[in-house]
Length: 558
Image (cartoon, rainbow, N blue to C red; front, side, top):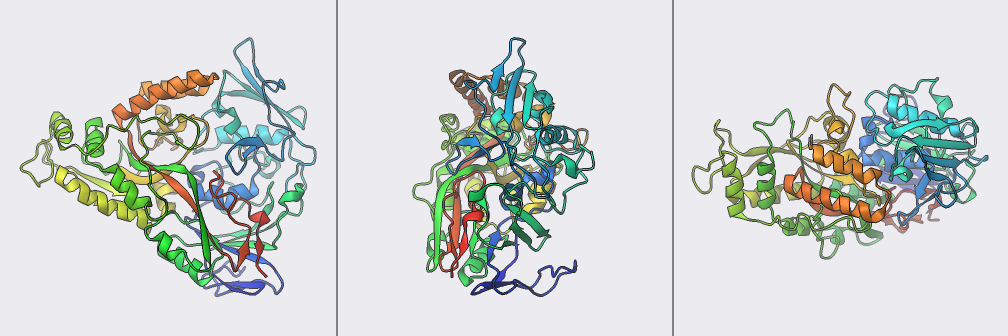
């Protein structure tokens, strides 16, 4: 999601289409002589910036904007292990008495905030900001997800340096909450922030300030009030520009128009990322698959579990993984669980291992649903005369995904399953269509995962976005299973690791039976940079924050 730049020893200019500061699109924005500047390509450009609404459904909003500006209470290190962020004195633990399961069944977590922590305008970060963030997540119209926050009965903010969170019952994923604090003083007392921060984030609690943002570029400059010495930026500014299709992203890297990028793995990567370019491919934190929208407005028939299972039995997922990832990693593995990442703990099992190509299984499943096949080589037809053709959406210009679409269309033809492929740019798909359930009934995309096994946001039947709930929630499959919902919430409430693992196993078996989506593979993270232009990238490639997280440590060569 960003624009090109031509680099000249110590001074850089951003090419046609840049904002010249007048509010109009100008020809060139040139850094002052002697200003050190890093130029980065962003693969998916957010359409808006609000960190609470559906704007935040785009991973690249976090990677390109929020992680540089918004502090959390806890944070991940480069290996995705949790630790205290610079905002708090220490990570709360049961041993320290900061995490308590109370006699009345309530659950409390206490955070102690560092006195030196402050926002970019000099205002201290306090427990009031924790309280405000909680209320904003619950009160904002169209809030993306409220799970866990709705269990909090109160945030004691009497002491500005101590925030005490009280939950109505145990909640195991509590460490993954409050990863982006909001400055209470910046919203005029309104806890519904849907009308704020959609095209600018003026207050920062991170190493950077957002000097400007539009659909052509973002400019970050150092936050002069940042209090963490080891994270003070080493360059004068960072310019991010959109490069939203694979070819333009790679060309921008090859020509030196940008210094670094985080492209998704693409066919021929090993042969194209050569010369002055170096790359690191790390274990990914996103799982990719075919996601079924059971209430898609363009569906021509009910998307039953038998149809979903039949599609799964028409796929050679090993071949799909090889085509999608074989040019960047060796022996890409098929993902065999629906919601967990095999790189995080032991939550992912072989629940989907039985889904291999099987013509007999496809025939049995579709026949049971009343479908018939006029003759071999033809598509299945239902009682209304509708052919088994599924509309399929993904990100336009993403060559890997478009290659997967072409492969699958050829692969499933002998099984009598057809596709209508309609693709959209990333902003349209992730920030407009998915949150409004206006896609599919099939989409190919990747969903984020975390070390904790909580998957409630995916499978909560109350998290299906609808007009009635203001399109809040992330159950984009419209998977309305009471048992799956109950198991997901039970996983969240269980504090015993062995008992949680057993519950994860139960949910995994149910998902393999219902097939709300078809897992394909873990998407590796890829970070590419020009070694003649920039130094410092590489450590955070596998981070949930993305490979640009530590740009405060990057420097311009020369």
